[in-house]
Length: 254
Image (cartoon, rainbow, N blue to C red):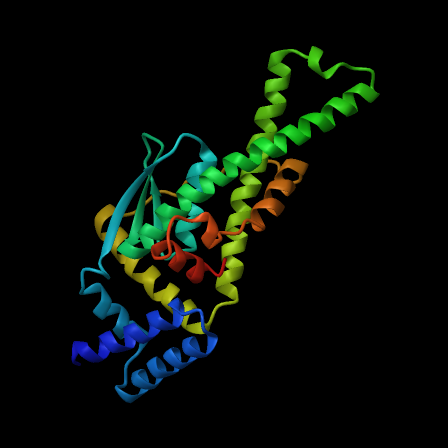
């Protein structure tokens, strides 16, 4: 099979995802499907061809983080963006594995969502403190007279549960976008995952399952984080350009 046909089909698929016009997207995908049928090809053939090019090769990137929720965020973004995250055992570092363009998307989104969650949790905790102050006052207790250790305990518990809920909210938002996507995108996810699993197994061998992050999913902090982060919008006006970042917005339907 001539690579020119495979490149043409790939170009049609990419065009269907990048255009803002629904009719153009449908036309491009229809042409891709016709070419697949005409030349007796499957999406797996496109994937194999892509892997043989520099653009389609599996690559790695490394992300350092300081808190558990950040590691969970990186893993969540990988799961929903054609990548895999492997946590180092001796330090807070994730190895991101995937095709170059997908790894770039994860790196960008990690930076964006980490900063946004850090902003949101501070605002949420400030509101929570005011609510606690009023509740303590009604019980005849001066909140400000509590020991620093007690107040620090309130802060640590609230922030941990809010951020856990927040990461789960980001994941839920992305899963919904995938569920509402066209069948061809779902097929690409399966194919990409096979390529990544093969690469990971060959390079890292058998991996141990990571520990789950404990938190109170019934707490108000968790529920607030979940709700607020499901509603985060990644708009073009919040980004730095019209090229790569705009493509992310289109790809994730944000």
